[in-house]
Image (cartoon, rainbow, N blue to C red; front, side, top):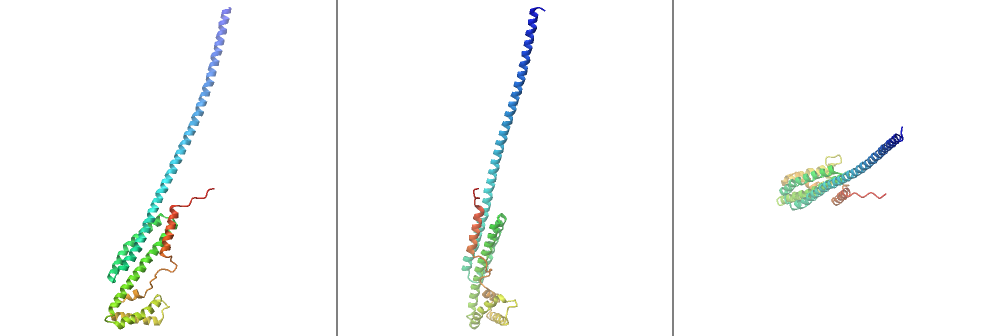
Length: 264
């Protein structure tokens, strides 16, 4: 082979090696580029996932906060509505029973008070459903205290109406009415023992005489119980109305504005 042929073959071999090297280098570059793109894509996905989770957590936190605010608003309305119904019930009882004169007006007030007590009872159940337990218990105590206030006012009004009725009979039955007023304090002293084994025979004699005197004067026998029953019908350990209101307000305030936990 002449020199020109040998040179051509050598040149072709060199060119082949160069092409192969170029191909191999391009292949490694492509692999590197693909690996870099994959890592970049993985990092982008991780960042996007982190951003999504952060946004989701923010939305959830905002949702919980909005729900909590809504829940407190519902509770606040329930507490305020119940407290207003309590004040309306006790206020009307004091005003209307004080103005009532005679049995008819007193009974009319008793009938009107039933609607207010029903509304108070309904609102008390709403408070118990909304909770928490501390507020529900304070509401039950306050409701019972308010009912006792209204009942005491009713008893006093009925007693005044009965005394007015009895005094009217004094114009024609002065002796009988005078004797009735003498025996009423005695009957009031043993009234709680009526129907029990603690009742004495002398007490039965007093009751028998009083019934006879009421009948002679033409006064309804039911007024005897009105004039003799205790004016404080509630249990002795029941808190005062003022204390019951303060306890309810304190429990409601703690439920609506709980104390922040101490910092670690």
